Image 1 (cartoon, one colour):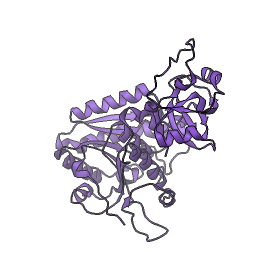
Image 2 (cartoon, helix red, strand yellow; image 1 turned 90 degrees about the horizontal axis):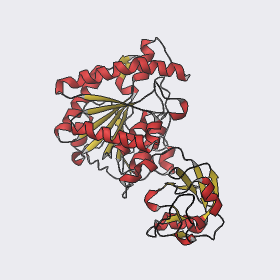
Image 3 (cartoon, helix red, strand yellow; image 1 turned 90 degrees about the vertical axis):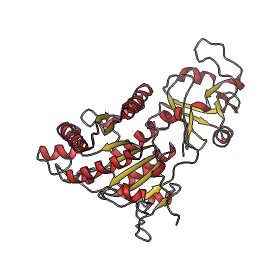
Image 4 (cartoon, helix red, strand yellow; image 1 turned 135 degrees about the horizontal axis):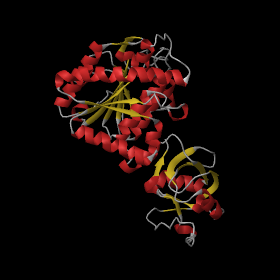
Length: 383
């Protein structure tokens, strides 16, 4: 087994996600001693010149305690009420624990819609950049108070991966009450290094049965996929260890480290890469699929065999191969009606260096071999 190389000593920016099981000692009871320990570790990293963003769970659990609830509510309204009660308490505790180090914190509450919108995605990115430039530690959580079911992240593991991508972090630490990814079907020990997330690795994941938590190892593996794809290394380990970062700086072999992709997604494509919802589907022929995957080409109208959905120019669409497998996401240059009007041309994909046509509906259609529907600069392959 490979020895994990966790480049914490050279990391310029990290995201630390702390789960409810780490931050609380029971329903409605914050473990302030553990929070204080993590604040000391954050200061250790900052002293080394590393910028830190914290993704903190715990608001719903705190609210449950305040409202006298013993099990996690299943209805959205009660969950929102718990979050509304608990979020203020959570934020105040973080600031109090950072006060001895003279660190200012900032609360950032996000919904899925904040990152689906390109404009809001960019605004979140710029806000984080400005806060870090002022030496502030952002404390990020899902805005459970207003998140409707269709716009929820689902768990803070996913949220932390998206924050890692938006913030262009070098490392993401997903810390909970487990020591890492455990090989339950084999050695029973922690798998320390994962170079690629394969079906075999995914099969090792298990869910959670904690009453205040959401997800489990399944959500952590899913989060690792998002983050590593954006060029962010991922560490999964125990948040109960108050000396975790000191040990990692000493290069102790603990936890599970997921190697980032060798060719990370370019910065301007990250918004496309983190979208969980597309506005339509373009099915392409085998030649087009091969050119997109293997040669980094742009998609031309003749390569499209079918079009589904109702989208406008600039929307994100899925691109599927002839078998219906999702192979890429990208922003489309035409709306549904204009695209369907030109389908039926002979199959083909062109190089993205060719000039792009006007996307206005009254434009004279150019020759088929120069009509780029999804430009490669606005296209991300799906692993």
